[in-house]
Image (cartoon, rainbow, N blue to C red; front, side, top):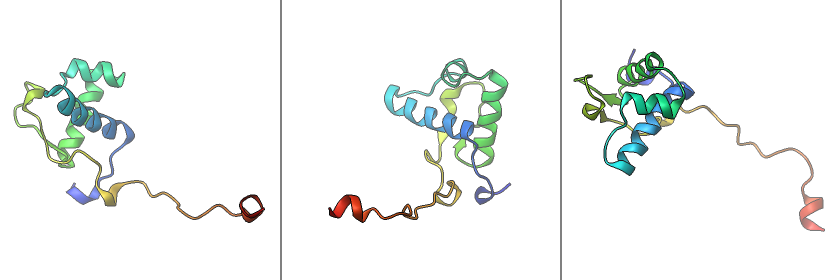
Length: 100
């Protein structure tokens, strides 16, 4: 899997944001236990999300014995991988409500 071939799941995105915000607010990364508490998932789910973030090159984590060794490469989902939002204006005659 290459960097541009992968779209994060909601849970993976959540873990990434927790890592990013926790580091910014507390100047350290959360422990695996803290991630399980914050996400409401079990350790295997947290580890799978972290593995996916490594594979997609959002984080780098050589020594997996401690989350303090995590390096965030990108703290936000990449522009090309974000879900597309339809930005067409709603149909209908809004002029009636705004002009009179």
